[in-house]
Amino acid sequence: METGKFGKALLPAICLFLLAQVGCAGSDAKGDERDDFYNLLMQDGADPWMYKHTDGYYYFTKTTGSDVTVWKSASITGMDGAPRRVIPTGGHNIWAPELHYIHGAWYIYYAMDDGDNVNHRMYVMENTSADPLQGVWKQKGQITDTTNRWAIDGTVLQVNGELYFIWSGWEGKENIRQNLYIAHMSNPWTIDSERVEISRPTYAWETNHSPQVNEGPQVAIRNGIINLVYSASGSWTNDYCLGLITADANRDLLDPASWHKREEPIFVSGNGLYGPGHHSFTTSPDGTEDWIVYHVAKYKDAGWNREVRMQPFTWNADNTPNLGVPADPNLPLSLPSGEVSRVRYEAEKGQLGGGVTVLENPEGSGGKSVGRFEQKDSYAEYSIQASAGEYLLLARTANGSAAGEMAYFDLSVDMGTSVTAAVHPKGGNNWGVSTAKIQLKDGVNKLRFTKNRGEFELDCFDLLPLKIPES
Image 1 (cartoon, rainbow, N blue to C red):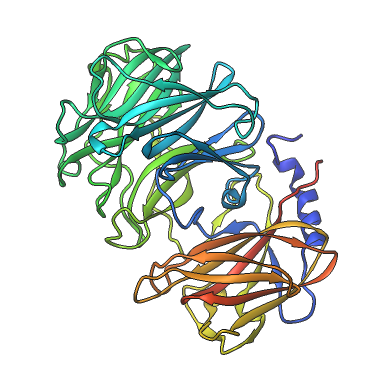
Image 2: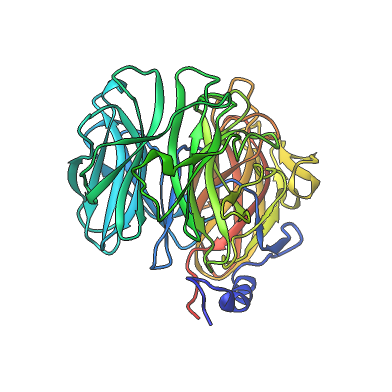
């Protein structure tokens, strides 16, 4: 029996479909069916928010600057190539938007200012369409308590039939520290109580940079325990991390005494990844696994230059999340349970030309990668047997430019029109993911990666069809 959008009962049929859809022709490109992925969701971005709706789709947003962009995907790992909608706001410095479904309508909460950070406040818009990528987004205006102080990172807690707004804000009018506040809501766009402080930076790992920061609150409820996981320390530093505050769902949530903060952070830098923070929680397609989606710095001391990663987590006996440590970026993770498998092609097994060569690489998939795309005619080509359709290609790429310059490659099918994909500079062997949507025909397709500009290496690439058959 199907347990999700693509539940476990569909997996055998989907696996057979994939093997028929994508294969290899000739000895130059050996594709292997894989049920794992390299843990990088988007090679650029911060403040990720992912929500799995009752329609089986995942909706995603992140900080994009002057607008709110919403993605819609049937899978978590294919989000970067998913359809999206850009929603204008009319403001500046749009930070950490979140998409919530409340009382039969969609709401986006976002921080916005007029070009001056001192004037950052929280705002909300509404869409009554069944699909947030359709319909009209109506501005509902600012959402605030009576103090009307600086506010960012607002989220909604729905518990026991009540709505609460939780956000990060200043106590006064100066940027000394960011505290976490909660207030009751009479509807999804109105606060009807005074704000109550439930956390301020107090421990050494929260107060080690100035200004001191508690921000990015997210809620996960398990067996009546409210887990408020938040970001602490300087978001621009390697010390950024996640802390935990808990409350019993049946207590008075506007009483600060109902909330209890842990003395130690629950998710910190590790495995060569720095500053994990500002996250959201979701579940696998079949609902059997819990996943955290979070951003990290692209490299040590990268500041606000960040990327989006994800990994599964478990639960402690006291109903609090056990997030572990950031997953090793060079070890594949199993796909979220219920996601379709994909076919992986090792870069070194293609036809190489224009000076492109195979490199021994212990951190590459299969222990090798290809590089030296240095000439105008540098290329790597792969012959792939496929059924006609649209596919998502996810290439594991690296850009070790000493000058920190962006790199780009062109991807063509049968030497036809090409699409251009970016490779962000993170240093050698610091692998990212470059994505592209391509159209393949029945039979043999020649996929060619060619140098556009800049320096990059190619380790492997995955292909998965964007249209999955119904059971």
